[in-house]
Length: 262
Image (cartoon, rainbow, N blue to C red; front, side, top):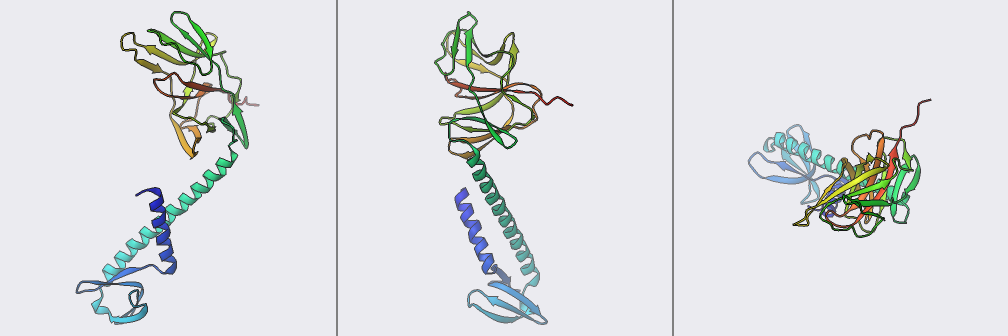
């Protein structure tokens, strides 16, 4: 059942509960009657018949009270669980709408710093091969060579620094294929983002980078929330958007530096 159909079903059941939940009054000889309420009064059972829309009576010895009570309790529990599911769903929808309003309309990656939304700058990638060719680029076709290609960022540290070890990011990007948070590896005066190996004969690409486990939530078309599953140790990191096997890679770097104890 899809989310929309499930939501309609939940709302329909809630509507019925507002009018009085319907359930079955089971009879000893088999069969049942659809009722909205029943009361045991001595040797008689009074019930409100849904079919006839009126209160009626029946001898209690003709009613399977144990089965009726058991089935009603099960039905009440299911209805209660559905109400709770609907409450959680509506709460999540309200929270998502509130968060969406915080994300700037311009394409980009944004860090939630306490109550501030701070844009991250897209990094310039240094692309070079084992043969020594060096290319500076942000989004340009990568040379397809039968060799190993290294994608790095200049410098040993990102300009933008974050103190919390589970940072929260918002992304508004027109074209999103795959999102990752990477741990960058310092290499001399660079920070390694990715190593691409191109096999000489098949021209297949093997892309190597150190990804972290993340949570990703879509708030709207082209808008996502992203954060790491586990706390991050101090170090250099980057958010990347890319299509595996293709020459498209965007990088937003940051450093995690906890505040110095006073």
